[in-house]
Image 1 (tube, rainbow, N blue to C red):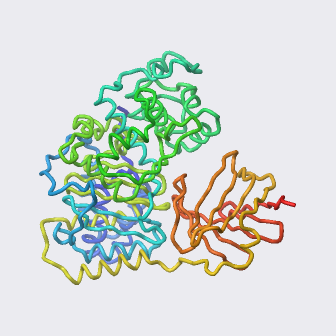
Image 2 (image 1 turned 60 degrees about the horizontal axis):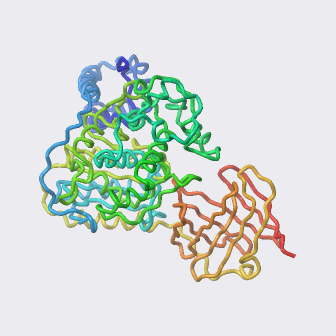
Image 3 (image 1 turned 135 degrees about the horizontal axis):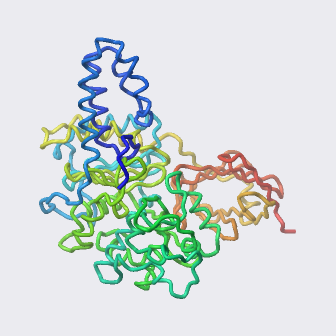
Length: 558
């Protein structure tokens, strides 16, 4: 294990954040004027704190305050860097299992002030934090289920790299079933492939090295592995590309966040079970938990994406956290062994700077464990509070909602008195953030739809690979947008009633006519994208504003 470096991580230092919020807002602010300004340094800039100390210490009135804060900070840091334990507390059997759906209770029954929840929900919207949904379950009951317009929870949300935690869970189930073993060599699953760069290190690479992100293969790792992922996806055979990479470390010795390695797990699962990861999950994980509304994409060879692109509704993502909170048990059935769960939430590796740990697909601290994905997707399990927090988002940072969540955690205790006014306040807040004010409808349809509907437009050469586009208005309330991009045919249903329609690729779309010639397409992915389609006679211009690109297309029909 590398030596400890005392740095503060963005997603990992939850305990530090708790003390930071408490001390800056509830201890220092009342004692010293202006102290909140001094101590509200964002976590991402905490490394610059030492440079500010000289100025702070010039104020004698704050010296004793700083000393108290320092002691608390050191205690918090010491707690953060305790080895994350894999053993979960023995929880009482739940009152019910949410296979058929969650039960909601007033927050006060679970020891949480609903007025506090209402204020937090409003704050998220007022600050413009791009949260799509926020769900909190305590003691098995939903105390908060918030959806922020335009997302309403009616269709699955992209969970991005939360998928990795699901992928390793499926590997654990396969191990429990005797389908494979963690010490099996990776190359043994691909006897019919000719693998490049096959040195002794690669020959010794095991399944365990993949699930713990210590495969030793060439990767961008901590700078973000999108470039490595893009390189893999640019090839005709993604599994082959992942296997062919050079070895740069002995397997099992170096932690490297690597998405192609997770895709190899999907291929291994399919080779050993004869089922895709999606099929295996439907039979052994999603099915028993009552999860049926699932989108999970596959590569050109049919292997389910092992690193990402799993789409679930927030209520179903919360079930996964609940399964892990209860050590793999669900309604009398051991879905995955308790020993696997325990090992998965141990810190087998430390990230760069030793900031937080990584188990088998899960990030872990001494306080909690969580799955996280690009854009702010989280399944956050807090065993000490018997609590699960699930967030779906369009580009948020966990620290943007952390102060609100910390206030909830610190306020959690035994059942509180009934709070009808707080419940009413919360209901009003939830309704306000769900309704939004940006929904535009497209009725009645302009006359141009009769001319352009069903016409195929061929596009000029462009950097995004769009070769053709077609917009159709055949069904009331729903349009169809068909296009060919990068040699793949794609069809998107488009809601014309302000509601999104889910496509097979997991994206959802709504649209409206901005004027007599311009149709605006809103694409809901991790974040909301916009496409404009401007029709002028036989010509179509497709606008992609986030990259400043306009593509010219022409109707080729005589």
